[in-house]
Image 1 (tube, each protein chain N blue to C red):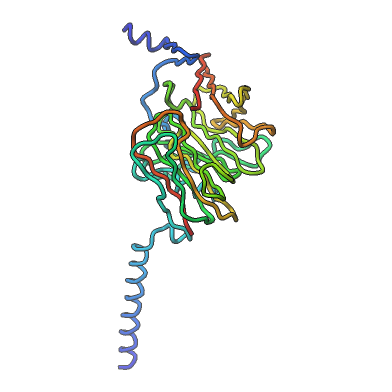
Image 2: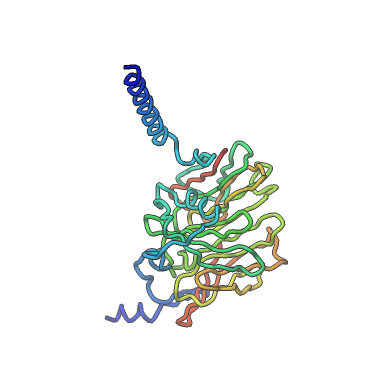
Length: 192
Length: 133
C-alpha cells in the first residue's frame, strides 16, 4: 500500500529530472489512441514510403497501414504535417512531411530517465533551418527544446509538436527536451 | 474439329498465362513493383562513437533508416554527397527513437549513412537499410 502511494506520488530524481508516476503498461499505439480508429484517407507518398521503411520487420513488426493517422495538420510556417501509424507489435511510427520527410518509431512512451517521454526527431535539410518535431502522448501539455543553450517552446497541437526558428542551422546542437505534463510535473530528457 | 482444337489451345495458353502471372506475383518482391529495392548497408551487435556505415554508391533514394535497441541512445541517418561521415551533408535526422529515418532524396544522387551520436556505448543489434533503384 505504501509502495503504491509512493508510486502515485511520484519520485524525484537527481540532475533536474523529475519523473512522476509509474509508466502505464500499454503500447505506444495504445497510448496514442491509434488502436481501433479508422484510417486517414489520401496518405501522402512520404507516409507510404515510411510505412515500408521504418518498422524493422525483424524487431518492430510491420506497419498497420489501415490505421495511419494525421496527428498534426498544420506546422507553423510550413506545408508539412505529422502522420503516425502503429506497427503490428504496438510501436508507433511517425513521419513529418517536409524536407526529406524525417521520422522515427516509439515502442512505449516512458518517463524513465533513458526512455522516450515523447517521440522526437531532430532534422535538417539544406535550405531549411534545423527543426525539432515529434509526437506526444495524452497528458503532455507542453514541450520545449533546449538548443545551443536557449529554450524554445514547441507549438503543440493535438499530438504533434514542432520547434523551428530561422536562426537555427544544421550545426545547432539540441541538448535536451523538456516535457510538461497536465499534472504539473516536468521531465527534462537530455539528448545525448 | 478445327474450332475444338483452337479452343483447347487457347484454353491451354490462357492457363499458362495465369500460372506465369501467379508465379511472378509470388517471386517479385513488392518493392520491385515500385521501382526500388531495399538494401541493408550496415549492421552490428554493439555501437559506440566511431561506428559508421555508408553505402557504396550514390543514388536517388526512397528512404534511409536505422534500427537499434530502445534505450535512449541517439542515432543519426543522413544523405550526403561525399561518402565521408558527416561531410557535405544534404540532409540528416537524429533521434533516440528506433527506426529513425529519412525519406526521398528527390532528384539528388546521394550516399546514405548511419551512425550513433550518443556519447555512451551500448550493446544490441543494430541495422541500417536504404533503397537502391
